[in-house]
Length: 127
Image 1 (tube, one colour):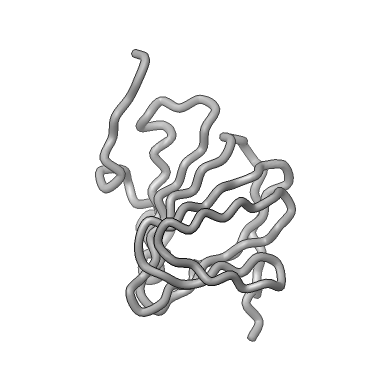
Image 2 (cartoon, one colour):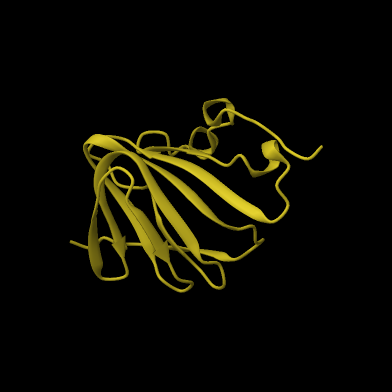
């Protein structure tokens, strides 16, 4: 088939599967859409919460598009404020993690589909 359609709310919430649902929802529709080269994630950070972990990629560049809500993204040591329709490109090697304001934060993430490229970063927010 030359196209695929899927409502993102109908994609399995992997945050539930990994016991992270107190802070976020994370839906990865790549397989549901049959995408071979493009990675995508629908990420919702719950009001007043931070993403459950920070991460970085060795080779993958990602683009984050804020759909709704507001908050911040921490990129290495820099905090960047976010509002609806802000788009942020993040280079490989940059550690990133999101924090939602009181209204929550909905983000659509795009990048190349790569296996085994990500690395979890612990204690990233260290206040």
